[in-house]
Length: 299
Image (cartoon, rainbow, N blue to C red):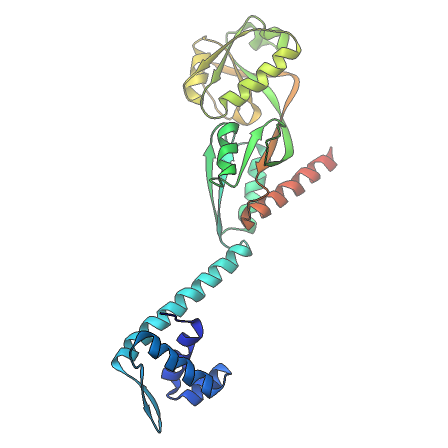
């Protein structure tokens, strides 16, 4: 059975106008084309849709049933076309974004505030995980883009370095280093550094280890399978100290204080697949680039 969209339009126009001639005028087609198209459709489905009379045409019982379905089908197709067009214009759509940590970063807050104002109908879903998992998800198109720590390059993916943040150390309030305005990497030589295994914990640990390697410092690094809040709770208990991002300073835990770590900053990038044709993510990347350029011009 072969049913074309023009057949549906022929049937609807003929039923509404009461004749093949008037239907042809409405559709801007020839009467023979409308008549032949409806006849071909009737032959294909094996039933007459119209009673032909000298004064015009009247839908049969089967024709009336078919007419209802035909109208519904065209409405669904029209809705689908409008929805696809809206997605192409980023009026509607969906984004799935990977995060390294919280959304408290000034850059990310401004980015998604701007995006929401311009594209309020785009739904955004956020996923927190490690960079390695984000990379795998992007390659499989399970997420559209991810914001990660560092400047690493990943095969098959593109990346843009967007901003940087100061690095901090979370300390017990009673710790000797808490009395200083800032600490250095050398101050950490005899400390126990606590890191998380989940989320961005592994990425932060890798960054810390690279920094320690530069200064040939080897403190004890203890990986904990706990959440961010629990990790800071361990700091309050005196179990160690924790390297944190500036965006994590909003977490207030009694007994814990934060001190900037020397003059080091942590770079952040967005990674994405050049094969991803989601217009919503392309628009997000465009806004991110514009923000990055504007910030660099100010500095």
